[in-house]
Image (cartoon, rainbow, N blue to C red; front, side, top):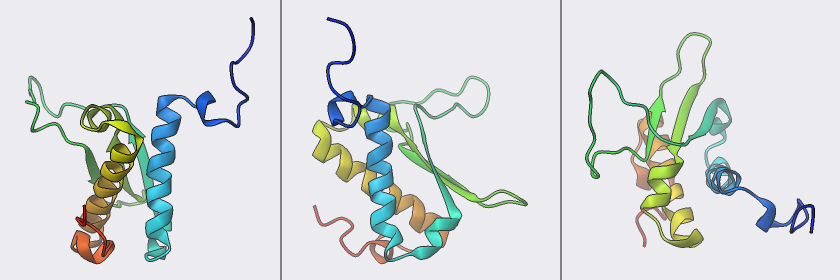
Length: 126
């Protein structure tokens, strides 16, 4: 049997990276309804965080799940979500989606100088 098992429009045909990026996008779209200024922020997915500095080592608790890069001359602010650490800490799509949304809310709150509860009133209701 040659060819794809499922047609491209079916979720089965999506890679794990594509499915994860969709979770981030869903979270951003959910927040943009309340915070239209998020259109001025770039949201990125990276597989893993980069080590800062020579010889730095992280333990399991210190590996970041997301981060922010403030706007600079000619560059928009960025929110980054790290796919592999999030996947390792979540079981199943629902738990992963909830964790991704929590990370996005926390990073947006940091960029906007607000509390996560202000960014999303349903934050931390789990």
